Image 1 (cartoon, rainbow, N blue to C red):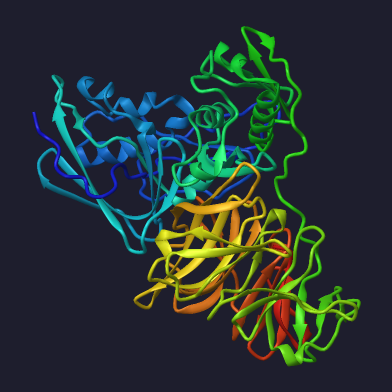
Image 2 (image 1 turned 135 degrees about the vertical axis):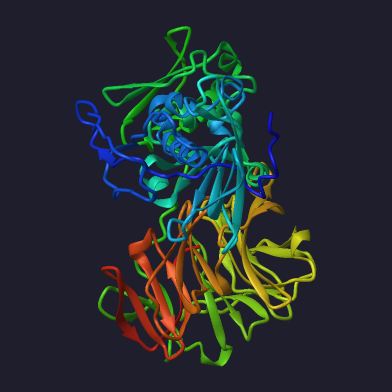
Length: 567
């Protein structure tokens, strides 16, 4: 018996696709496309809508160890369609049971060839350039640029002389192309601590049986980093009574164990909202029904919970004439009652979601309300070198010192300032912050020893929504350097201004997902986002305002700086 060698930081498998990938529209069913022929490394088809699959092949008589490992990886990629039955044909009887394919998904960079080595007969080592990993509950973690992992497989010959894998790491290895075909980004929804919003927790699951995967994970709870900011109204111990969520005619039926009945009337409204929002985000689900012992659970779904607060479609800017103005789609229009702000040296305006004053920084050290023709400025907070303010729900305005001592500040006009504990930020330079539209998360750009990174923190709040402390954090933007600005684009995406591939540009970063580089505009200094990618704007150092146009940017106005939307 051979024993496994170290498998490196990550763990398993290399996906060598043995047949065509086909993504099928789910209309009346899925027809499998038969395939045959030898294993060919790196054969992958494009992405289409619907549910995709990859066809593997059974082991061929007389295959040497390297071919067995290649065939195993192809069959493992196809395993979401056949419950890994074919993949286990490549394993010894002793290995079939212990192997846990769902333990983790290692996603490799398809532009970097997988490297195979056979240091001794019956031992195959596979080295992959890692793009990301997905754990057993669907949490996606991007890898550091250039990270590699070496996976070791030990094989034995059976009584017929055929090589089979006897020792292997858990999980599967899959290319980025196959991953995007076979897996889908899904959001699990939890309740904000003040019970006013639904907060998404991004996960990745196989497209087949997606409703079952998302419900299992929703019942298991929020990700560790997010959990300080949210609650689940689903009672502890609740599980699927039958390990399957069926979808028929667009209706998902969720059979839960009797523990769910312990939820009171208010919690039932919240838990039904969690389940409904989570499942109806799947393309095949239009509604959800929760049952216990075959009977629908009593309760009225809460429909007033905010998912994505509206920000308006017109960005607010400061003009070269020191006026507040909005871009109306064709030109900059001064806001009503606008006054000349030149003497105040204002910058970084922030706009509330609801009624309330627009605020800004004066000379970088004073947070104040922006004066108008009928109202003077009110000083809200004074510091040394303050961060550009960000409005959260409830009228809380976030700021703090750039040279940070481990705390931030939240201010309400007319209500004074409160300190928010932020121990992680102590002795760091904070370059930007932006609170999410649900108030449960805070995106922060920090710089330490000249290296910048984006951290997204959970926000610990009281039951009435008062921010108290930052919880754990997520680092979703690996590979982006020299970050200078960040804004929320939607509930699960932030836009980040920074440098990658030696070019400064705007990046769309999914919290718990891959990032997308947008075309660059020379001299970009600030970004702003309304509701979605199409409402992205940027300004350059010479005061030109750009908006999204097709896949790129178009100049829409000049003489503008510090663009912003509500938030």
